[in-house]
Image 1 (tube, one colour):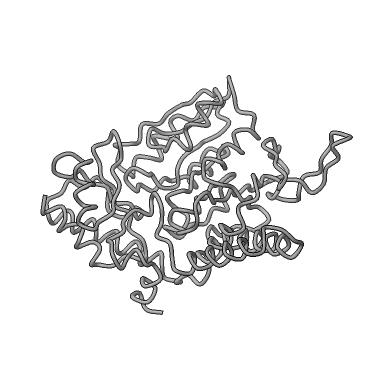
Image 2 (cartoon, helix red, strand yellow):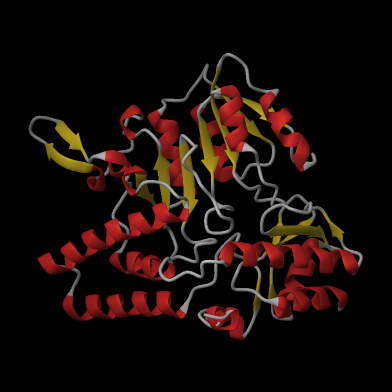
Length: 363
């Protein structure tokens, strides 16, 4: 399959230079067709019957396996969630983090990671890495680790500027468990999460899946108490006795039953992906950065990072994003930073990048 053929999967690219997978990835025709077909069936036949539920349960396990493949981990260590934040909440609750517990994190995290930590009441030691060179991030985070640190919680890739965080090296150097926010990594870069203790996945971003889908990798499921329990978590239960038996492996952390149509759409999104997609995305991200620099833009993303390219546009960033949208270019303003972020995926091509640069030049 050629790159133009792969790109043709996504109808939005017929109209827009879509550079916003850091928020929502583009939806493929296969995903839209799978969702629509199952919704129509449900409308005509009802969401009921043994065959319907058996098919949903079988699809859950196929999707679990496909998500595991994306981050190179065993499927029985993957829970199905509704978001990265949902995965973080499972870990925070399972570890019973609270007052007196020390967690090392950074000032470059998304609130989806830091919010549950703050709400738990843990003591946060915050490494100031937001404006630091990527080469300094390891030492800045490690310097915050003390003998009392229970957890290191960081992103795999910064949502602000695409900086790749050295979480594997931190895990090895400190022997402290790590909770990794993989929202801007899974599906964007070639990621092996097996060294993490906990690793979250967002289905709707770089995996181009349906809304409110995601996953959580737990390296040792038996060592993490299941505290946010749902019907999907239980192998069996006895209400009269007030007892339950969790499912084996990470399935005990499954938060809910995703809608059957969402599962169908996510399965389609994760099927038949181009094998060279990660190299393609990195090459395009590097080219995007080069084009912006050539036009004199203030690019804050360093060379050799991930697939997010952030820059300071001329004038107000809110106005810049709105003007670009009017010209058929979809990017994201990062509130409070003065930055605009372009998310570059394997489905993009040079024409998308040129439209971005040309659109900025027309302001």
